[in-house]
Structure formats: structure tokens, C-alpha cells
Length: 348
Image: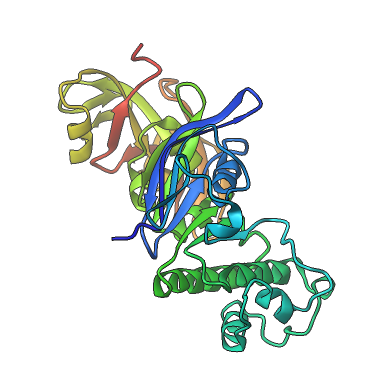
């Protein structure tokens, strides 16, 4: 079976500065993978390495079961990769239609028309880039990258300039296109919601033992609900870290005795000691009481977001949601079971 993209133990340096190391991943046909992490963690460098625009310092890259870096170093134009970057890189003297068709050796009017329809550019075919909004220019760039039917589509913030409705529609169209054409895609984004919503799997890049590496890669739901460590949990949104002592059965905390998920029990097998409950704000229950003081309250439309202070001063500030505006003081408890990991800061 042909694997569109396989990366093994890839590392990259700028001068003598190590950007990332030991990056390995494999993407199947039709898959869309999101690479997510803080600025400077090496996300854009990774996709430039895949495209052949940079040279890594070690590891292997395979495209369509053929080595393109490692034992072989294939130039960018021969890798069968489509690119969409933030700066659009459209030809200013070519129309929308001409820009989209530029990468097709044998011009295919039906293919160009299909992509104009899919990306919502109807009626703009004869305009030039200077006559388009930023969002429209990004759609042209995406359509142009898809035109030659690449095996891999590499995208750096492709939805950044799109309104919410068009963003979701374009993401759905992109997912369908990848599947029907047997291609795969890698999406780089700084938008947490985009990262969680649009891809089949998400790869979290962040600080490892020496430098940046992939900290966790799984479905977005799994990474969100069962983060491998505090860094991963924090990157994907607000998370309350409740410290306690794992006794092999429950986590004893100042919020009470917390029951673990089955996966927590498996991961903490043969371990007893300091541990953390990772609890998202939506996993907390709010009731009337006096233990927590509502320090700040923000209306989000569908709910209120509260930052609460423990009057007993045993817990750090806790973030919770409520459908109703809270009044002054409340009690907070957790739904059960909860996701529990080792407390690495205290397991030295």
C-alpha cells in the first residue's frame, strides 16, 4: 500500500541552533493532519523540509514510498507537493483563472472551473490579485495549489483571512477533495479551534528534553481530553490542574477524592505518588455555596466564563463555565471520572 508521506527521525538546525529533533509521523491518503504549537516551535520549518525548500540535518522523508530526503535528495519540483503559505505569492499580472491554471502543464478548463466553484470564487475569474480582498487572494492560492492534483498539500495558515462561514465551508471542501483525489494534507495553524475542528489527527509540537519535538499525536478529541502532559493540555485551551497524591486507586486532592478514567489507571500502573488531574472548565459543576469567590466573570454568549478563587487558599484559581451568571460565592466539584497524569514537576 502506498503511503503518501512518511517522516522518520527528522531533525533541523539553523546554523548551530537545533530547531526540532526526532520528528516522526506517517500520513495516509485522504488524511488531513494539523501541526499545532507555539510560534517558533518549528511548524513552518517542518513543512518547508517536506517540500524540499529547506535541508534538514538528519532523518528521512518518504513521499509515495520513495525517499526524497535521506538516501536521496529530490528537488522540490519533483516531489509532487502543493504549497499554500500566508503571503499568497500570487502573480500580480495574471487573473484569478490564470493564477489557478498556472501550475497545470496541460491546461484543464474543467479542473479550473471546479476549483473556482469549490473555493467560492465564482464571478471573480477575470480579476487580478490587486482587485481581491485578502481572503479572496488566499482562496486563489489554495485553488492553485490543488490544481495539479498533488499527493501532499502543505498549508501554512490557509484559513487566516476567511470569515467563519467560508472557513468551515472551505475546510469541508478541502477534506472531501483530499479523499477523492487520494491526497493527504498538513495544516499549520495558530487558531486553536481550527486545529481541533478540521483535521483527522493533530500533532502537538513543543519543548521536549532538548528542543522542540512532537509531544503527542492523535485525534483532536483524544489529545484534548487525554493530554500527555501539562504543555499539551494548556496549548489546547483552559485547563485546571489539580494537584494530589495518587494512591493507586484514586487521586486525593483538596477538591476531594477524584476517580480516574480507565486510561489513567493504565498509564499510572505500578505508580504511586504526586499526580495531576487535568480538568477542563466544562467538566466542572457549579452549585450554590461559599468556598469559591467569583473573581472575574465573562459572558461568552452560550455561557459565562468564571475565574474563581479558593477561599480556603488550598487551590490555585479555577476556571469554570456556568449557564447562569453566578452571584458572589459558589461551590465547585468535578464530574467523574477525570484524566490523571504524573506530576512531572514533583516527580524528580
